Image (tube, rainbow, N blue to C red; front, side):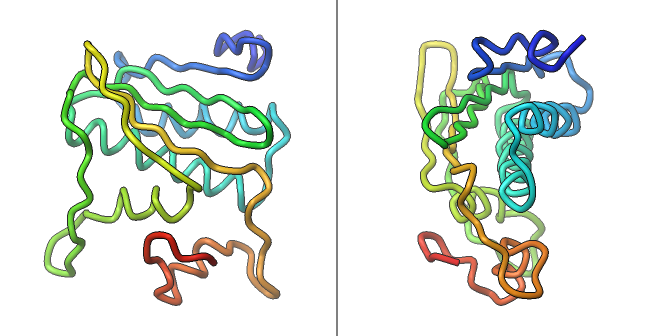
Length: 162
């Protein structure tokens, strides 16, 4: 079965994965995102960055809302929109990351690698979404992953450009 049929991609533009029954939703979400992005012809650094945003949003839903319900990837006009739904009506809040406590970097990563992100509250929970361009990052000379290089240089503050 091809990727579009397997994930119910509508017109090849919107693909959804039910992660509510998965014992390993982050791994399932990463595999789904890799497959869909390959179908769409995305590659390189932008693909890695989008998969990382998917991972962070699903991991946050699992950690803070109990269990993510659904992951949707859609594309339109060169933008990939990632949406993760969960049953909690509570909006995600970026907490300060400190060296003495693990975690706290998830939404910072999402903020840095997406052009915009937000939360929509509905009657059955929320949807946390992020938008990433397919052709956003250009590797720096000698660099294989610009996003990791920005992290290593400490230039990972929200809203800063790489």
